Length: 295
Image 1 (cartoon, helix red, strand yellow):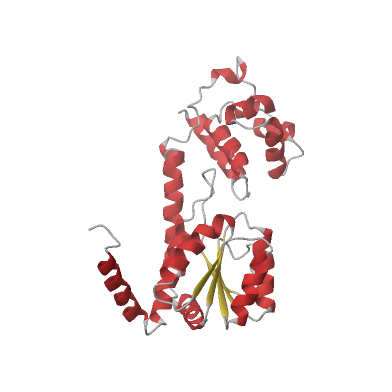
Image 2 (cartoon, rainbow, N blue to C red):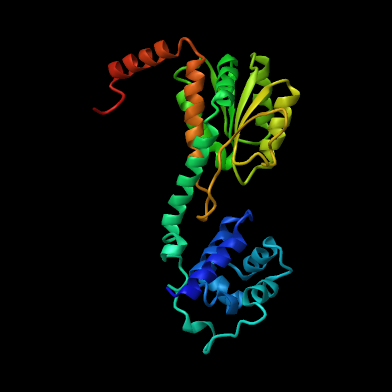
């Protein structure tokens, strides 16, 4: 990869950084980075074909970046003094500007792993002060029952937390489906004595998550939120926020930091539950009796 195409790819990544793109838009962005040398000269139809999306998706992509449309994006990429290469864009191979050079930090998959490593380092720095997590652990341990909310992309995080939390907490209620029943299940948890709610809030943030959190706060529940950013649209000043960044390099977010923060929060909750060790030992004994796990 030439130095020019490498710098072009870096400029494209800088342009895309900071924008919340849909999976289809990320495919377009990745395609442009991989073809950094020819990207400014591709028509919207050509780019759509190469990225495997529709032409209107390319237009929406340009608008998401703040341009009036794709022609405006292409003009910005060309710059005022960049001549079109002889033979048009066809002279630049698909491998040009694919980010495999040392200055680009490896290929896309390597950059995705590196981004997650950086996120975990950021989380480690945040946990240098363990007080917020310890406080959250005490709030969750004291809630009977403990509702755990996570919708759509965050459902897996909520489900994983609830699975392990149920081994040490007397009553955990998983709320991982939206719809009209969600409010009913929240009301039932409050009526049963819940005092806190744990929410995993990850992009793209469902409107139902924000609505459920409003209901929880109105009912007097103390909300602990694991979110991708302090500026996530579902975050409220009264919540106990535990931030954990996500990476957007791939078509779908990677969420190693929120998952690990969930496990850290479980540890803090166990520390606040005196009966946790006995419950874990009892579970292990039952598991052995039933031969639940392969040796």
